[in-house]
Length: 397
Image (tube, rainbow, N blue to C red; front, side, top):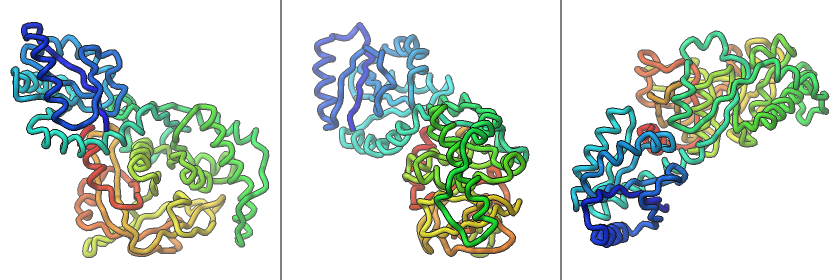
């Protein structure tokens, strides 16, 4: 952790005395830092950009800088306040100004130990956000027609996470598929129908990789059901492979789910399992989640089957380790609300009337959320327990 320290100083104060006090105060934190002073030209280019309000009388100075800082900022404003030279009163005025202008932030104040401890708490969520900043995500085709509540705000997503959304016509992918030779399949299945569909499924995989490269994407969500009629195949295998290769790949054009998967990957290293809650047991808190694709690096083993709804193409039946810890996560399309639960895999199912990958998961206390105030259909299951880190990250958004 290294701080980039920018300073606000009133002209009324003795410069040498303030400089001496600054060095003493910053050194007492025992945290590496670069003292940037009053040159804010590269503000927003570091994991930790901190504005040290060195004196009172700096409120108007901050107000004049605010349009520039708002444009450059990559996260909540961090104001550093000492107990001298009216540093804290000025910081309080500036923080309220930020709130009135729709921004969030925090004043770092107290003993050196208190400030250092808080910086350590902020380090991981800020590093996660830094990983996400500059990410380009494709929306290939429009969101599926049934996602009537999965709306999103591109400006809010860009402003709060630094993610750029790129709209890509479905025809672009279909043309790329048409131009991609059918490969020799690298997978095999004892199911004759699946085996026959494998070359086409892998052709879709290669075409999606090309679209990712052409548009310089780190991830995408695909209006995948259009493939059923257009090429009589599915994207399930392609998405499973791409997610395991580090390209975040979501289903059905669901942008909030895709953004949730990008956060999941930055936190855990896994894109997560985008799944439908299919059955909830209110007595046990167990929930069955199902979908026809899952990242191949999330499962102990997998089988190939057809896509559930259509009975064509190639779907994935993945099996996670029993009792494996998981985190359920979903944010909405403005990043203003999130749901986070920790739990574990109870068992893997193979019911004939659900999508191919089926996980029964124990999630204590989730019943009221799902049945009274859910955030749509798709939710993301992430290997491991990450509730604290994700909450800290979302609170800072």
